[in-house]
Image (cartoon, rainbow, N blue to C red):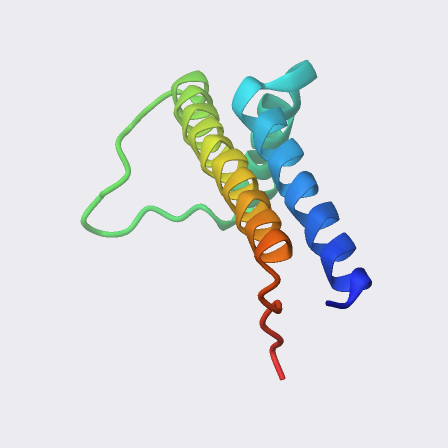
Amino acid sequence: METWRILAGVVTCLAVSLVGVALATNFRGMTEWHVRRSMATASVLRRVPPWRWLPVASYDQRLARFVLMERAIGVVFAAMGVLFLILLAYAVFSGTPLKSSR
C-alpha cells in the first residue's frame, strides 16, 4: 500500500474528529462564535416566504436553536471521523488496498 494514502487518511480522520469534538463540546465558545458569524453573514439573505414557515422568534432563541443543531452536527462529525479511522486501520491490518478514485 502507498504510505502517503495511509498518512493522508489518518490526518483527514483526525482533523474531522477534532473539528467534530470542538463543535460538539463548544470548545472555547467555537460553536457559538461560528453560529453568530453565520447568522450575521446570512442576515442579509433572510427572506420570509409568503406562507411564513419561519416562526417569529427572538435572536437569542434562534441562536440557541442553531447552536444546538451545530452541536448535533459536531457529534456526527466526531463519530464519522472515528468510524473512518477504524475502517482505515482495518484496511491497513488486513492488507486490502485502499480504493482509488481512478
